[in-house]
Image (cartoon, rainbow, N blue to C red; front, side, top):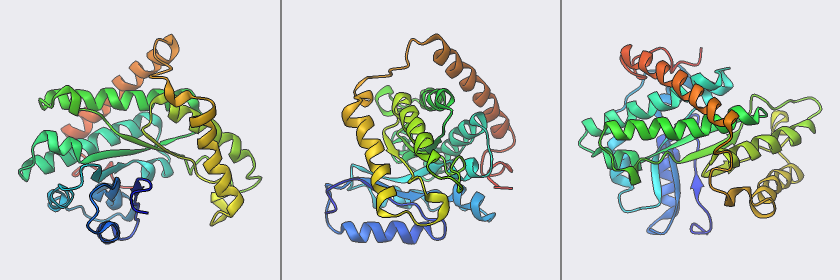
Length: 275
C-alpha cells in the first residue's frame, strides 16, 4: 500500500511527530514517495510561536535513503488563509525557501541537496490567470535563487503542490464551490503544478462526505485524463497576457523578497506571523 501513491502529511500541531509516523508506516520500504511536511516557519506563523531551524538538517539525513521523498515543505496556505495577496504569497514562498536553504547550508548540507529537500505547497483560486502566473513566477524566481547559489540548472526545479484555496470556499450554497474548484484545478494544471489537490466542495461545512470526496477526485481525473491539459508543456507560454502578468508578478515579488532579506530574512521578519 505504501508504494501505491505518494503521501504528503500536513500537521498544524506536531509536524515532527507526523513525519516520524509516516516514516514508521513506510518502514524499510525505499520505493516510496511523498513529503514529510516539515515547515517550521509556516507552523510558527500559524501558532505565533518562535522558530528553531537547527533541526532541519537532521530531516534531510533521515530521508537520504529515500530518493523520492522530500522532508521539507514551504506551505503558503497559512498566509492565504490570513488574507495575503498573490504577490505576497509568492514572496513569502521564495523568502521561506531561501531561509531553509540558508539553514541547511549552514548545517553542512550542500546547496544542491538543500534544493532537492524542499517542495512548495501553494494555493490556487478562482482567479485562474493570477494562479497560472503565480506558479510560473515561482519557478522563475526559485531558479534565480539556484543560479545565485551555483546550483546546476537540472537541480533548480521548484516542485509545486497546488491546493485549491480554503479561503475562496463558501459555507452557504456550497455547490458553487464545484465551479471554483474546477477553475482553480485548471489554473494549477496550466500553471505547471506537479501535484494538485482539489478540496471537496463542502469543506467549509466540516468533514467531507463520500460524494464530495468523489467529486473532488473526479475533478482532477477529468482534467488529467480527459482534457489532457497536463500533457501540454506550459500551455500558457507565449500568451502575451500571461507572460506579461508573470513578469509583473515576478518583479513585484522579487522586490518584496529583497525587503524581507534586508530585514534579516523570513525567520527574523514579522512576515511569518499570521496576524
